[in-house]
Image 1 (cartoon, rainbow, N blue to C red):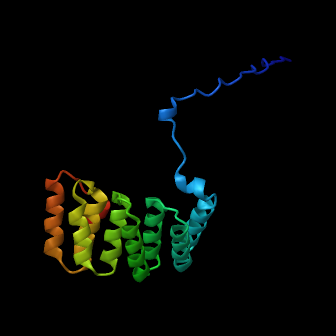
Image 2: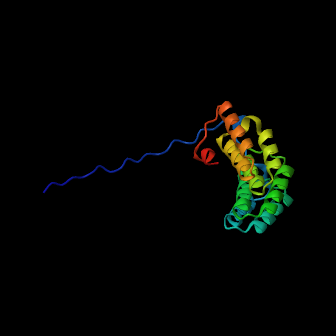
Image 3: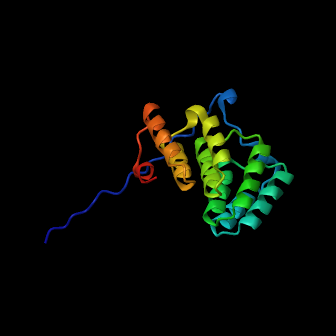
Amino acid sequence: MINLSLPSPANLVPPPPKTLNPSRQKTPPTQTLKNPNFEHLKNRLIHQASVGHLRQAISTLDLMTQQGLTPDLFTYSLLLKSSIRTRQFHLGKLVHARLSESQLEPDSVSLNSLISLYSKNNDWVTANAIFENMGERRDVVSWSAMISCFSHNDMESKAISTFVKMLEFGEYPNQFGFAA
């Protein structure tokens, strides 16, 4: 019988953390310093939105802003997607209003969610206005959402011309763009 034994693990001590120049250290967001409940409220809002309790999630959003806390773009995008998923478009428009009031600069994810919200609500005019104002932030998702919006609103020629513009702008369609 052969007996193999492994050496005992080395006792490595991790090096002490490097101290950064104080001017380069990241300070935690002021909202968490002011209110330690920020993460708790954010997690509650995310849970409410993900299980379809959109009204309660918006109430939590309002509570956060009343306490001087600023929800991030992820939170707004989650609320928008939840309103689309549950087909509660009037609440999605309310979230859009809250996002506009927040003074956050929407990213492409939140703008794409807004395009989808208004598209599924048959408001192609607002969806197109958001799309046109995106400028350089348009991506393949934005283009596909607009093509789909025009298709679902019986604007086939506008959908095709948007598809051609997408190609001219150097974006290449994925399966969703082709399906639309």
